[in-house]
Length: 440
Image 1 (tube, rainbow, N blue to C red):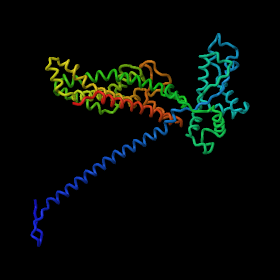
Image 2: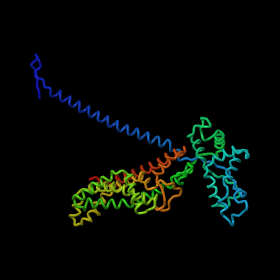
Image 3: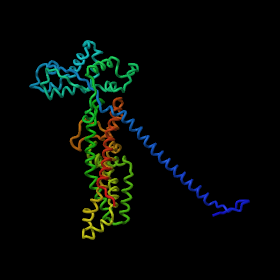
Image 4: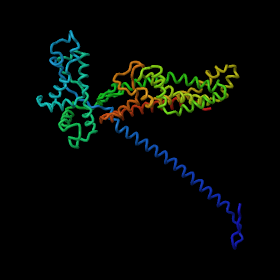
């Protein structure tokens, strides 16, 4: 402490309180700056997240709606089976030209001149190219339709769908858009009568991949992702928990176990594409497993998820108080009984949480699946994990590379579906932890 004498007064004045006040002000100012920096960092993160989600949702929510056109289709026997051979040769129903039925229905609905080929061509182009297949399947399943006129709802072409959703600027010159003025007029005419309308796009969740945007769906990707998650869960959970129990409760503490622990922690930080290279080399090239199969993808994601589950399980086991172990052993329980009857049930909430987070991480992985061939074009859902398949993140990647405008909408819609699954899985992890967690 330094004291000074005020000149002319002989009063002793201490500088210590003044210095202490300055120090306090500096610390308080530093604390306020730190809080401001923290709030600013969180705010920037939330802003960027909001911009990302807004961009995805604004582009993708329309994918859950699909433009359809209802037409009175006349299943003319003259067109489908002119020689009445379907009783002896059912293949004639498959080989029939169902595009003619759609053409005639459009001509009749729009009151067109059937001899004007440009008008008929533009009108028919408003219907999806997959519509004839829909009519064929209906006739094959129910031949009694032949000779009748039935109102059938058909998917509109992708360009018509985009125009109806406002994704195509109809004010620009006709030469610079894929929907001409004549088709726009017909769209308005059909909309006034209720023939052109929007409906919930069930095909997005049922259909497989397709080169036609209006018919493309996530059906195959959803089934493939389900197979992947089941394989990862069945393999990674018991293996990861068993390894964690051994390392935490039974393994001696020596250089070997220290080396294993270090490698497990390192494996958790290895880029996912390395696991894809490993799967390609071991499971496909060496073991000869089928390329693009869900089984291979599940094995690769299992290897990637194991370190996460092991680390989470060991943390959950460590969180159980030593008194539980001592009490069990003191009452005569064996070490095995102590672990499986007392410690493991108490650690289960943390284990389940780590497992769900690991599965959510695996669900969003793309790079390792690309290397093992799950980027293949698959139109039909796989019946078993050994058949070719794809997954949700890979489907997003494939649609993002398509040139058609309508695939932008499909890509964002698939991202929304993937985000919903991830949110549900993380929400489940939080609820499980809150439901079963115990405070010590």
